[in-house]
Image 1: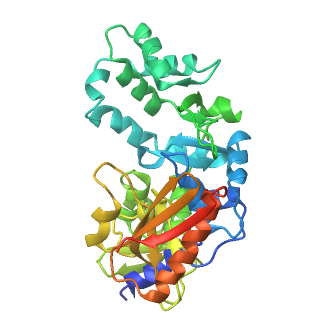
Image 2 (image 1 turned 135 degrees about the vertical axis):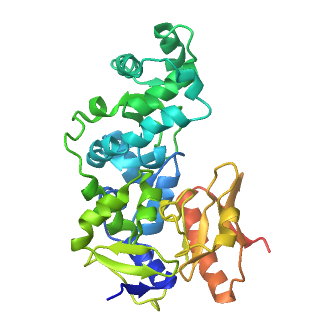
Image 3 (image 1 turned 90 degrees about the vertical axis):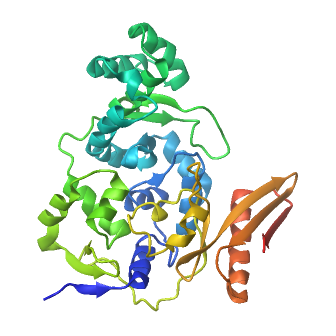
Length: 368
């Protein structure tokens, strides 16, 4: 018997349900971060906007407090980029992503030449020692590493430490309304616990399906940056539901995970910049038309705040703050009906109130 077929619309509704984008969640900030397997966080503020879009009552101080109390850390993990992860997930996920970080040391076009001939074990040990007594930024690490490895490029050495050693970006980096260069400390010393001795890739993939499924092997690999996950999903297959997607590949899912009726209404949502829901599938057709992708994903690596209308990307936003006025400009990418424009305006004003509570005037306008 063939696999049950699932349309892109049904896939989209399933993913939106798990992402709390069909209806906002009552979960705490920490529980939501763990459910989502972390939040994309290469910039300080996107995790706050990602939680705001998904939670009924979210104040930015709740995430700042989690970072300050070390319950949440900012660390390089999946895809080799910075995530805001719970401390527990960081201790388990970071060792599992080490293969892709090791691979980067030999393939990164900017730094690989500067690491040729460097004893990577000695480099990792030096990096750990240099942040043992106090966190240091990469610019502070570079000259210190050059002293340890004469003739080597400090930028390449610092990048090597970033990949070899689980390092967290310590506060004030990542706190709401504050700033600072990323100062680094080892994950283990910062949270006071060792890395997981036996992290489970099976558990990690099941967690991914709970937050982003149904998903193919290539989807799971796109989310994690890891390879050979087909072996993992084949091992897990007896306990999973398997579907056939519109584009062909098998889609795996947890048996009891929510899969709403494709006709379920999807409210307007404004996603965070770099929102992980747009980055965690090889085939983004469940939420994003391919011909719109380049308008959301820019050439310089920026992922714009996308607007979901009826479950699909239909626009993006740009916010400008001048004196006491905060203005959100909405640029439609498809025809947006008047009723949906009204909903976007209302959601936009709520977001501006969250992001700019001191603004005396908050305006949402369409650029067309």
